[in-house]
Length: 295
Image (spheres, one colour):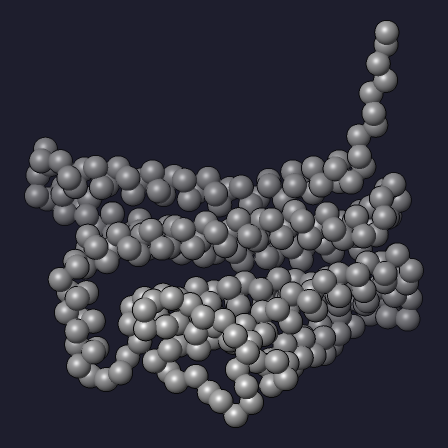
């Protein structure tokens, strides 16, 4: 009996091609990170041994400290390199010389746009996780080994004497909140750019698409930010860090505020940005399908 193989999904093939195209450059930064972390591990091993002279050990220590700083910088740059390819590949593959080929593929506009969002959104999430893990690990290592726990405890005690400062745990929670908000805003930034580039290629704007995309982007970004943060005046959903190091979530009634010691964090803008991103995805897809005029 001869079996008949099912045809491969064109969308999966599109995902595969987008991933391979993006990995050619982005993966180089991950390789650089692995090499730097390997060098960091070698330096730690050499410093813990007793077989090096004081002069060589001093050089290894300098290399060790430089490796920590460079690794954090490279992991941070990885986010922006990924973001650059989010924009560059979208324009090149859909509205550049490859545009005709892309739009003649047997996939829908939702799939064309979805492939970009999934692949580059995945790269952005991965780069964000790598940065947080690498930075957190190296900063904790620096605090514990290079600076020392005694000095950190002394600084915390001094801060307590100087005033009502948030605890270190509260500061870490707030830093995570700001980072999440920052990352969600970056994703919104990407969706706005995709929308601006797409809308600038409708027939009436086609001749000046590059110039048209700039005011479209600025206007849309202003609307995004205004709606996201103004919604907190309507529905002020907050996260509060309690004295017992637990988190509380709830709606803050009008006229009430959260005192600084509880590190109140507004959650409403994060949800609004996500909702706007979903709406922007389908609007951009519709314009790609119905309104775009390829050069």
